[in-house]
Length: 126
Ligand code: FES
Image 1 (cartoon, rainbow, N blue to C red):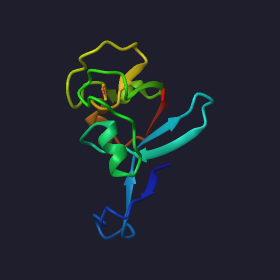
Image 2: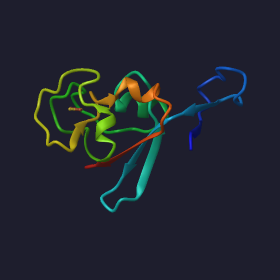
Image 3: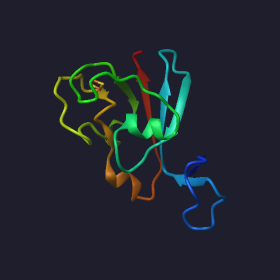
């Protein structure tokens, strides 16, 4: 199943899709500590997860925005293999193997071109 995300900021790219809709094959879901989805947004090929969320109206709390604090950290519940932990810049602090810093992490480029569907589930600490 390919996700269809209604985003009024995105114009139709090819005239086939309805105006304001775009097909996405990488979806980010943020869950609470009970596993309930609290927000979701499609990933973009560029930018961090924080940037991608902001583009679709999802605010992920940040502080330094440089990979140097832990404010934006999340635990990856699913899809770690699809995440580039240093997409925007190199992490300046250590994290556990299942943790990422959303301000500098993004989705690996190849996920957008492989024709597969990807779902990344993040548990946010705050
Ligand atoms: S906001 Fe400080 S590491 Fe992301």
